Image (cartoon, rainbow, N blue to C red):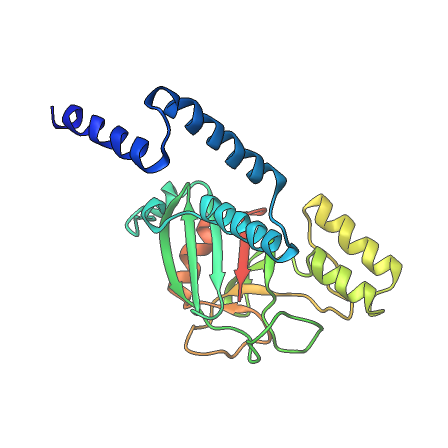
Length: 239
């Protein structure tokens, strides 16, 4: 009952300080609230204040859309899942980590060390530059008798490589069209353009960056991956 004992004292204080009769306190407070609302509707007086307000709104929006650390779900790991039970593989290659990851229906099922091209930094720009391309690809060819044990061909060049080269004048309109049509059909794009081709995931060892732009695995790992992957399996290569 402490709150009931304090309320009259607060009212008497207001009445004494503002010289307002007690029965008019509520109407006066309501009028003050309306005036404050009107000032708010008029907006800030200067452009500097507007920019601060907009910046604050953008910051608030980012805080709302950005997931919090506590909301991020940990990735499930099952490295013991049998190869025959991996039914929907997705391949992720992280060049800076020198790792190849296989995801299957939201579960991380394999983690392999890899070797890259002898010039590993940056995206592939042209034939012979020694770089491993970056982007979104799919398996477009399987070779069980590769020079490097077994191999899976990537659908390089992808659309962004073709567009960049065409705008730079490195591809003819016909070459650009043929690449785009092949990608739309989900088949092997042309490998005889200035962009190069024949980018594979293959065996031969992950002891260093020794390829001409391909992704190399140890043969035992390549054997597993070759069994898992099929034509059309997505491959995402990140810097």
